[in-house]
Image 1 (cartoon, helix red, strand yellow):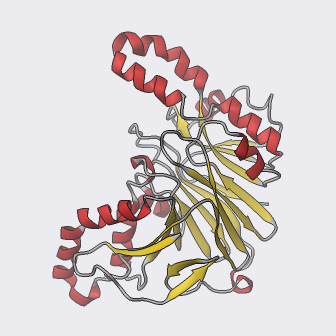
Image 2 (cartoon, rainbow, N blue to C red):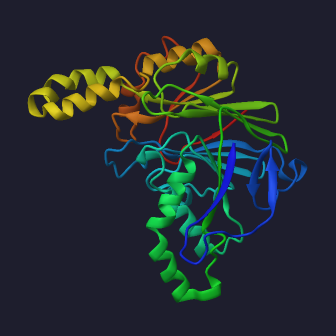
Length: 325
């Protein structure tokens, strides 16, 4: 593992702040309050449930895990900053990346700008698989002029430290273990794109977030007896019904759609994973196709799943909040 500090701003390439160790990983900033102060809140808030195709009713991948004082955002897709506000959710104390497709990272720089405006005094900790430093540094360069303008407008009132990120590149394993919260990164299969998912264990309860992946046996093991599984899902039957029409109208789009099916998990496969892992509840996100957030569309999307997995199934909408029990 290695850590680096990347500033979103032309005025600072490096901000010196205290270093705190999280499960062997050095993150920048002050330690959160103790678990006894935080209580045992454990919730998941779906901030973005869509895909790269535009849907004004769905942002792209972003899932917030609230565990005591920790507010951990898994991915920061399109509209993540606005989605947090719409859900009346706190700003993240830590960001985890699963991989670096644009629909999982596009909203990240706006999180940092928001922190600078709000006056955050410390960099935002970020953990991701290899590539995180390059991604965050690229955003810093893209926003360098914008940030210099903020300094020109506001001088010392602009928080260069708050608008920066403390980046740690990590390999699969425990990436945080503090105050009762343990986060484990695990590898998934989004080949040829390297990708990971995360398991959260807190106060005797557990949440698993798949990230983007095709069906893999490893997910059954990592999600074994989890209270909540948040998994991407493709309604393969709906897509396949449309493929002949797409092929006639747009062969290029047909080829890309066919490729997409090979790199994701169908709804029925997700149900098999949930059943075999014995999870308490299943939540679907990263919905393909990007259906409208209506009861009828969601019922159609999940059809057949209950015949495989007998537990509760939630087809996610932006803003959906699930208490982990």
